[in-house]
Length: 553
Ligand SMILES: Nc1ncnc2c1ncn2[C@@H]1O[C@H](COP(=O)(O)OP(=O)(O)OP(=O)(O)O)[C@@H](O)[C@H]1O
Image (cartoon, rainbow, N blue to C red; front, side, top):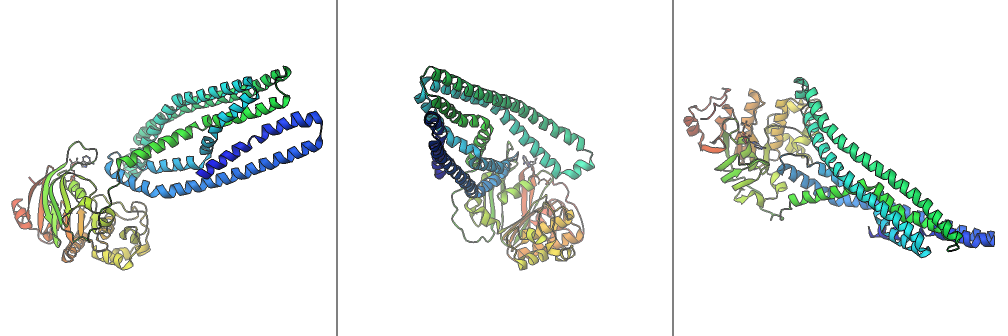
């Protein structure tokens, strides 16, 4: 950036070649009619112009590299912050901050920054106009003031509307993304018209604000161009008048006109590029907000690899954006080598609890700890490698089955196959065209719901995690899938893992050690499986009885 600033300085100094050349031609060459002087002066001027061009070329190449290095230094931090913000933000849409980084980089690398670096030279050029003659300086100064005034008008008339347009566009895009993710529902339920109307409502609203802003912006730009042309004429007219009065030479008249052009050019460019300035400034503001909203956690001391002893003490969890906790005062333990089931009616808080256990949602009271250390003492990235989590709604990443099971990291083939076998889907995967290299499509749409859930189970079991948290893992499974799941859980228990599993279905309970019953966000009862089932009036399930748990009461 410093090099760019220095280069801009040299380029601006070299801009004097125009006025100086005209002074020489008018006042020296024409008066002496000397062709040799004209030749020497012209060669010198062309040499300076070429040098200036070369420096300009170097300046733009430097800026491109500055942009790349800027991006390299910031993109990973911005990505981390966006993920953190998405977890905290109920409304979503933080991914737009990735675009903000692009907007800032484009500003840094594009012509707008050059304009910014050139702008401080304008006062110097205007000062020189004063040196030629105070009246010439006065015309230039008035011109500069008018153009700056237009820029201020632009800010007040255009910027506010652009901001509004941006925020509605953002909303419309988030809505469209969501609708497209649910395209099947939209199609099957004949919702396309309604969805389109909603999206178009927002889109048209944004377009309206954008059009008004562009209209005002265009008018101001046209006025500023007209002002500029008038000023050029005015300076020539005033120069001619002064030349007639013999106050200045004709050379000075032409030189002053060129100089004023140079003085006003960056100011006019700033008006033209105001929108870029504004969007870069807003992008910067939003990125600052993003960084302030997701402060970096102090580096956690590296704890020994966890054994998986999960402990919850008086835990309350409030989903992002919710007004009050949806899980309150829950306490229980899951020891390594133990399976605990979480059961309860719809909306009793099972998913919320599991999200709190794996740190997706923070606790607003109480502690979730693993091996005695609260979750915030663990580096989440490292802890994640010891955790197997299967969410309720499974979406796979676009990529191969193997990549998904290996959590998008380097593929440990042996571990991938082991996880698939543990989930009981090695045969199913082998039957896919391409086997482990079959591409599952974005979200896993190339697989059936049950296959997706089973692949996600294998992903959760990859590399024998110490704590396995499964949210209704059998909601899409058939009887075979259920048996595979139970085998997987029993193998994990034998392997010393702590397992927490939420379910609505009775057969799964036959392999668990203890049960937590949730009701209205509170722990209603907790104890050994048979005791809890007896309390609920359910005998331990016979192995092959597909059954659904009654509403706990
Ligand atoms: N993101 C959220 N914001 C606000 N409230 C939420 C959010 N997610 C869940 N809730 C509320 O928390 C309560 C518990 O929901 P949760 O999903 O944990 O229940 P659940 O027992 O897993 O239900 P199900 O068996 O249907 O999956 C519900 O009343 C729900 O409305």
